[in-house]
Length: 377
Ligand code: PLP
Image (cartoon, rainbow, N blue to C red; front, side, top):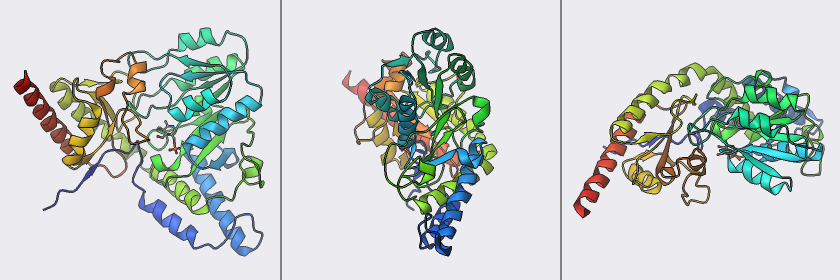
């Protein structure tokens, strides 16, 4: 019998939820543009506005705070560009931020300071406090949860410091949304990036949430869609699916939190083999595990797991299909482990058996590699 593949790469893209597929198909059957005033246009508008309410509920904000965009990357860029247009003169970026934030900040033309993290991957608040004493109003970018390690950052604590310094706090919640409960106001964020495909919606749709202190400045010119904040006809079907996925993700939060046990069981198994768990001891997403077995290259691990029917990722992003040493693990001060990091991430359809099979496959490959090394030595 062919083996059922095991998919544990939700932090790259979660499989689309059935609710999202259904919402998408329903929306595709509405033959209209949400800006049209006739009945079909109004039906399309209703779909977009229902989804806005669903996405707003994901982070506890009024629907009007949500601007739909093409994904997490654009949401981050819209926040950074808006802060620049509002006169913020420098950017502080968490050292383990995603490239969507890090590279956009660098490309903004403003001075960028990397905010160091400790060995667990947690941003250091004392460093931020001192940094905010410097001249100029700062945009501070701090992700809610890291895409590689799942480490959750002290966003609410940082927001107190940012507010006191009259700064702007942008939170990339692309990985956290739908995996842990999020309260935008309690976190004290000014803007927050979300992406549909990390929580069971389709790729190519996301949102920027903006609080009352933040003014958004459009990046592209054209029509007045999204109340003038984002020109271009809305991706109605994608937005509908995003809304449905967000609603389902909120419903499933408690169930997802149970994956902590499966994740920790895998962690114990690989640690018994000599691997190191990255981010251990910090608050982490319930379904993300990042570990490194020294000498067992990330790419080789991914290939060995794939041959065994298990899909996971190298610790680092491999958007170009090429695996680099993990910048996140390096920023945590574990440069020796960076080329060996593996990320395992489950989600709404994962089972305990998936995590067990992943452990079986990894341990078998680790033992093979070890045996080969002993033969050579
Ligand atoms: N931010 C984080 C933390 C991510 O993990 C990703 C995607 O991997 C993004 C932003 C980019 O999101 P998108 O793929 O929707 O552009």
